[in-house]
Image (cartoon, rainbow, N blue to C red; front, side, top):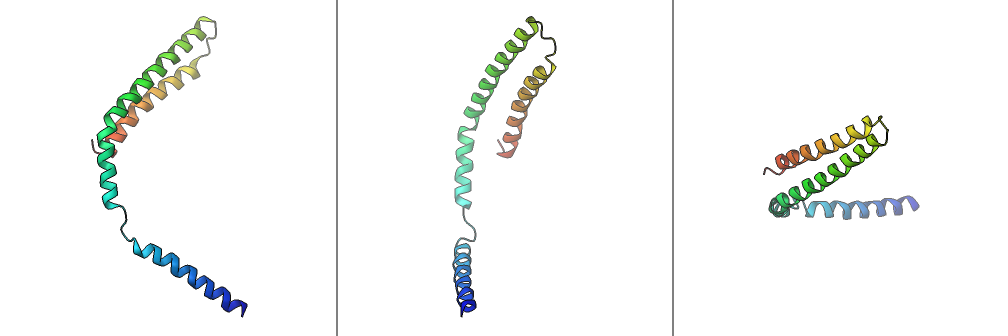
Length: 103
């Protein structure tokens, strides 16, 4: 009797899961297009904001490296590489996202 009860409960659970997936076979096509249009509308403003934040962070990083250099810490290669590659990342991610959203 316990095996029958377990099989019956499993069948009911499988039925509800499968019916939930079959009702929405192709969900979200119109939502995807509306989200894509919304991203295209605010992408350039966000892109400019990210570049401004990156420029400010780059200036602050440059000042930090300069201050360390002036204080006699001449082993600043890791800091310079970190700031350089973060600026490179910001530049390349904008190109990648522009290609991703076809802008």
